[in-house]
Length: 494
Image 1 (tube, rainbow, N blue to C red):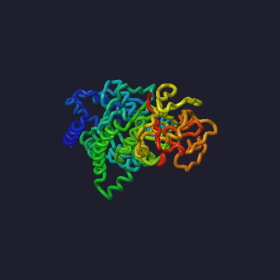
Image 2: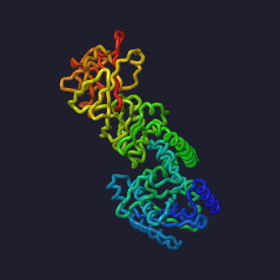
Image 3: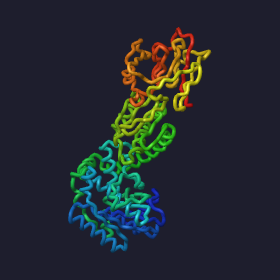
Image 4: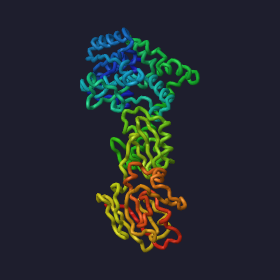
């Protein structure tokens, strides 16, 4: 058993490139069989890899005398084996209350922060923990029950940068290093029974944590109730769950590469507050990549998110596909996806994106040269107006540019560009000549509130609004079968 397990772990380390010669490794040691077995195996590999080992133990401020005895056990063990050690204590129950987290989650976050802090202090690039194959099976099943996507169904990875985790540092006690270490799990393919047999064979007497029997904890219920039940259906269920994690991990890696390829082609703009996707480019992707792009946008804006639920992603996909301009879908972390005319924006729920088109200072009126070029105040935009000698209906009806409009030239007399005024009415194409108040029409057309007072309007000499620029032309100036001459107006950046 001893030789076999050592060979198995050595091969696992080699296959996943977990250690390099000369590595400094902080070993998280609780005193239980997993961490005791891990430390013993790393000691046996120390000379081969020239490892610099350092023991770390965090007292969670719970379980009273049992936890005190665990800490004393680890300290004595480190002395006996001639290893440097760092022990610390944290009030995890208080942290869980402060941060409104379950005890298990708070303990995990602060424990990893502590291990990262120790690694930074001793100059170690790796942090090793004793998660085993049974832990992996429980993790995959737990994520499945919670509705995780592929990222969750991968379970735990053999090596993961701690920068990918949400940590809970106590900055006064556990300041994090600038370069966070890599978390490695050399025992991830080893069943718990083999670990316990290894400890017995080598005379290792691990501590027993009675809280592992407490089925009020979700993971313990899986371990002691659900998995034994599932084993009555398939005795190899734990191994099958671990195999599922390996398969999904490989598939997820491929999806990630494809997502990154699509990201470069679909993202128009990325800032700390917002990520803007090209709507047509996003719609052209397969469904899996559509979901992945939305998830990635959420993770980039909220690195602390652990998972974006399928329900949120699916709702966002449906809104992005079918929603009119201005439609929104809620995402976790105070984020929302908002549908634009040709964009999808993932940002803070209260985010107002900068308007992508021309605007005028409220109250402005600018005479339009027809034909000719009319610079807008500020010089960024110019309105080009031409009277083409030839044109065809396909050119008009197939116009793809929201900032270009074709109007019946006979209806365009002494046009001006101006902003809206009290009492304005508009006869939009398609309403049979009805002229609702312009403000009501803007609301129904989902013109962003922030731009309604500055949106340019093309207005004829008689006050008729011919074009709400970027949105709709007027019924009175629409190009039809009787149109003899066309005026084309196009906004371009100056």
